[in-house]
Length: 242
Image (tube, rainbow, N blue to C red):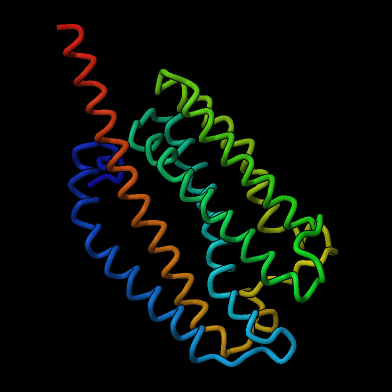
């Protein structure tokens, strides 16, 4: 069985419909456990106080926002190379989710950072690249809405997605490229010494799993909606020609 079989809209709808109940249940469980554990059963930080608990929303949202764009990049490349419509529709469906996660990350970052930095915003390399990434999300969605032909829209947005991927990478590795700025280092790292304290580590991992599950669930739902909308548009076009 080939993975490309699920680029067929009918097979995708069957598979996604079967997966959705499990995705919803797993997401709800992970979010509930991670956020409740993190908020109610972890201590305040000795320097940041209770504001440190924003980490359970800020870090997962930021990770999903960046990796959502990378998922859109892969789907866009699949469209450009193999012309599978489901991949283009999946990229289109992911954009509003990624944009929302970017807003959540920016807002929670401002709330978290203000007591530490004394300001709601700073032109820090990571913050600036993240803001630009959000603007690319807006531009991507606007381009889909502005171009009437769906195949042309898919091609143009795919090119935009490739360009915007530079800022997705910069958002993730800004502190590596520019060893300066107010933003702290990575909360999770392969280097154990850079990780958050163990008391925050496990609820944070579960919260991240919950946000990833939320992304997958919303992506499946939105892609299914896009497939149905495309089918409906095709049926209406046939009726006009009949």
